[in-house]
Length: 281
Image (cartoon, rainbow, N blue to C red):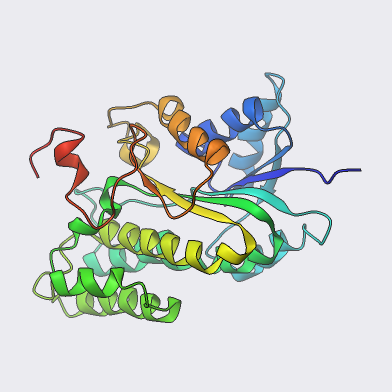
């Protein structure tokens, strides 16, 4: 008897995460685990899909809480492992946010980088060999978004360790606390730093897991109209989910950074917003 196939989506209760779960219900032959930090919102989202004939399963998961991560990992065992993990949970402070820059930096890096890394490292023993991990990134994750050439070289160094990458991300937070982040070459966006860190982790993890045949990729799904952007954007969650699902379900290669139009882009090359999206950068 073959093992059950399992797909897990973090932050699956709304926006693109919800659209990805719905798309997996239609295209993935196996069980789909919709996870969310908020139990009531996650159960409501799951019920909404069940009402139209789909069968996702809800599990509460707060990737910022170790106890929640351990509880989620306890669902899996040697004969029950994950085929596909979509790391979608994330946060964004908009430009008019009233919170201090220090708070924004700490929270953005916590959720979008440190918590994602912590959760992924914890769940790795329960990812099937030859499985797939897909990290939802952003155009902000392109290496060119970091102004300092020195920092870009350090972040993209193929010999950089995970501890080294974590140290660099922590250095950014300390730089913000001293109000030196712009002078130090990090730029003014915590979101950019968090997503550049996420992409660096993606490529690092893909190299680490090569011996297990696990493919790790990241994708910029477009400027998606969600609650996180207060409805601003150029593409619906459903449209954005299509490119995510295509990469998640059909890829045969790891270490990719894929743009919203499906193009594979060099992470350390020119900013694709210029030559793909036609923006002045």
